[in-house]
Length: 257
Image (cartoon, rainbow, N blue to C red; front, side):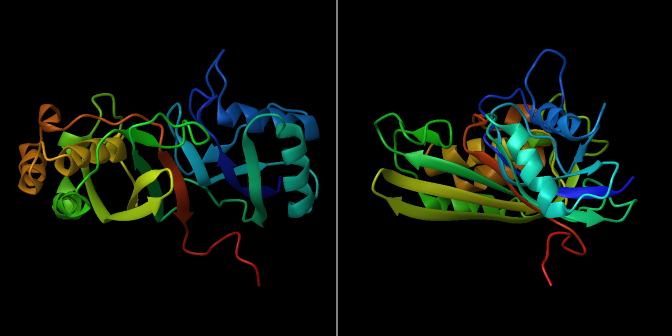
């Protein structure tokens, strides 16, 4: 059967995560149900990364096999029609090789974590950012973040239920951007690596928030890293604010000529 790559955006709040789960709403389940409206199932799709409950995506990538000769644009339009009213959208669709794989062919994953500093609760952007009620020292957080760059054993920043075979990963970028907004000061954490451990980004951000608040010093991040002990990690921040922002491949399947 022809294989199609899907560029997927979703709001994670209504879902128990990406992965299909019996009796619980999932992003994977929503897309597979939409595919079943186009062709008798069951359908099984694979994604570049599994996001947890409440985590969003602006650049998730998945692939599906579907009988028939579908025009990619028509397929994306049909899926979007059948995905309503779930907050899931197919932003792009492309015909790919039969052995192309959204997960195993990926060479980089990019995450964004958004933190907003303001006293008042969030309203129009509730669930899309982590709100803290104090300003943060971005320079101190960046100094702490710089200790995490490169090849390390990230046991400290790894969930106890992580299923990865090794805690050793290479972190290519952890950059903090400050955006002054009318609703408050937003801190955007841009994180890039080939692959990540479970809860690694949320562990990074929760720890660096402690640096920004003055409870930790930047050097404490280095000491936590070298401890290789989960107990040395700072608080793990909530999923609200985390986005799978992009996945890179040797050749972009969605690039236009």
